Image (cartoon, rainbow, N blue to C red; front, side, top):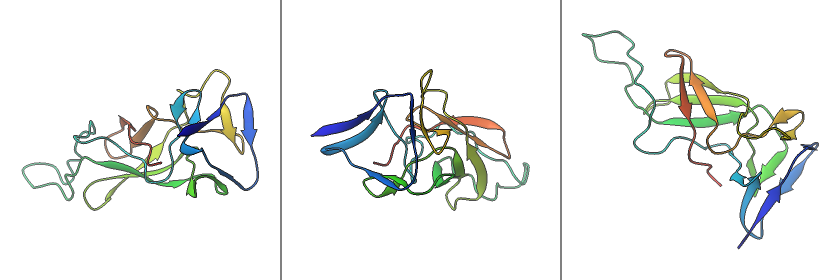
Length: 140
């Protein structure tokens, strides 16, 4: 099994389906995130305490998952690669957040339509708490 290794500076444009020879799409030695990527279990995300105690939270789930990438058309084995996007936290995906631009994919980044491709170790910020949450599962 061979991974497809992408090394920058490189800007992917248009419609592409990147496929490793039985392996994953890797950016600078780290697996690229695709839609559905998220946190490990147990999740390092703090719970969203809305409504505030003593009431029970509306959704006290800690898992965070990337639901939608800001880019379309560039995929890894049919799954859309993440280059910033929407993340949701909770058992019922209640709390919205944003996948932040990649800090790990640097200093010569691989980009997709001008946005740095997110890789394992990048973070999402959950809006109600403002907490950065590391994304450790790539979903490839």
